[in-house]
Length: 321
Ligand code: PBG
Ligand code: ZN
Image (cartoon, rainbow, N blue to C red; front, side):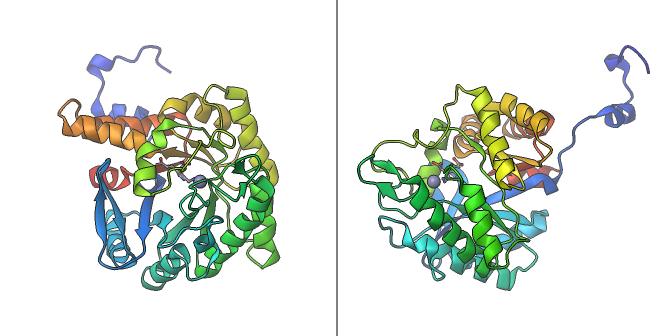
């Protein structure tokens, strides 16, 4: 082993041999936002390059994704009708169940992950059923509904379930719900360490899911807490999660490393909407070299310990790889 890397005279082949971290198109899951209707492909002002699409457009988008080598997608639904409990999410004719069936029929080779939450489906925009007295989410009633939503998704053909609502006990409740009806082979990727973050701002435009009052601090995590962040993920591992996640990614790479070292489960990061928009806007303003900053950011996620990257940049990354 040589002691000094003579970088100034390093042979480029040796440089590649010594590279410790690598990006691959297989690392990525690409988010899609599905709106009910037909012929809809509407770019989101706050997220250039990200669209709300109707199912017919989503089917075309899958062709593009496969050409780029991206076979994993995570679905978010924007239903026609919202109500107090988010019924559309638990209905086999709801926007997500219908989308999964359509995608699986035309693109059976796509790996379809579904975001499991209620904030896009409730008229108040919170992640579950409200407790009228506390004016926040009723954890335990929401657990039953999450299990129902999971079964609806898997019956429609979902390959993996990704609960994002940070309800206590959500993993064991969903696991039991799925096992009971013969879906014990379906993995759960938990949004296990999800911070209460202002970086989700643009997502709430695209998913039309801003809470109509209050915020999500009663169920999402305080960004200041490191030990609690580890405990949250380990609790989900205990409950039977198959993949853990840290969200957002950029401001939390220390947490990614911590969880990687404390668990043997695969770990995902969610490179969220606000992180995407910051790079996009800075790139469009000519302030940074967008592609270089994007690739540097992605390799940073992997170096920190991420196995999977959920990112709106996935298509652009795939083009460069
Ligand atoms: C739903 C959900 C959110 C995101 C993923 N799933 C929004 C939220 O918690 O407010 C955010 C993703 C992003 O910002 O890109 N609970
Ligand atoms: Zn939610």
